[in-house]
Image (cartoon, rainbow, N blue to C red; front, side, top):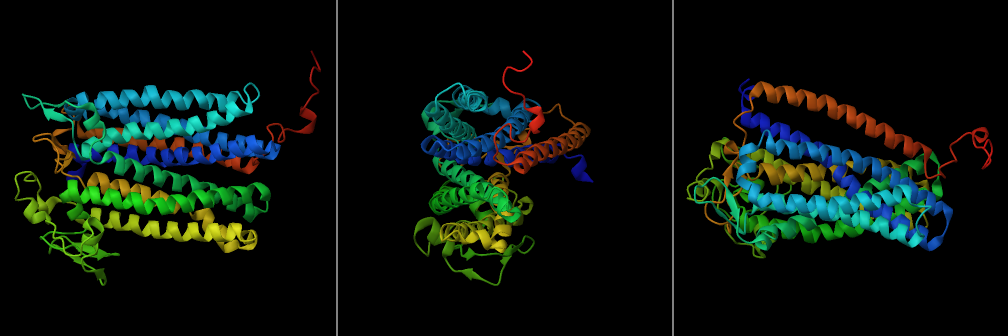
Length: 474
């Protein structure tokens, strides 16, 4: 019952809930933004009205997802001034610029040209319409960049110093703060993951139509485009995942120690799976590759890394209480993410082979069913990846990375608002749950309606008697 009165824990749970919910829609909108732009380009080249209907279909799917993503993102920003007021005071000088830039340079770009896609297809040229589709996707990617600049600064602070009174971080070099050591590795890793999500979502819809034997021409085009994007992004993920892991090993030693269940100093092996016995401080697993993690991080098989016990004895990480660290949670989330990547790669290979090899996927119902459930693989990988990143930096909300300026860090327990009580947090948690369920059901119903109707002309679903000749009745 202590958890029900712990303001820090409840604040973290509430923010985790809003972030996880928001990140249902962000990967879909950014990933499907690329699919929409590809279909718009296909329509521009082919002039085939079937491709035009397909483009309008994806615009509708994208718009419904984008709208709810915006609404849930605003909730998170409000919480910076309510639950996390002390955190906002500490990072305000740093976060003001990227959050303002996200609104001015990214969100407005995305919104303006989305308006062109929704209302301008008969009012602008096909070339401008196609360019607008790509600008919408570019705007969503830029939006993610500015948000990840802010989040990456919390992971590896740079370009700042601690104010003389110790109350906040003060920016000294904007470019150094924006392009801190983890910005580019984390941004590329996240964007590739979101493209995989969009590719698998499109293959899911295409496979569903194949199962129902509806809109089969559109279904095959969708599966093939999704398969190409999926296999390219899945291969790129190998590079971005490696660069992100190297950054963690260099800048966030306590996170690496939790990811691999290291309590003592050791040459870390590579685990496929296992369980961390936190009481006895050991990983229980039937299989491990000696020195495997060392090789992935440094290129050598014998590099020793510090474990949590020795790191907690150092001045920089003296706030670590080894007994309270959620080591098994981080270990499991990290290895689940890796396992999901294995399923992603296998599925992408099957999709690319059998969708192009004579279109054999048309008759392979088992593969169609696999593709229908396949968005779960990147979705789970994305969610547990964020758990690894965010829980892995505890007990800090602003992590004292290896290259960070002295003193620029903030414990999570010192970041919450002093004016928020446990009953208020429990009440808002309950209200968020109710409202978010309502929003999700509404979004799912809208998307289901679009999918059931399919890529048809706007007036195709209207009863014939309801369509009057132009000018009649005037």
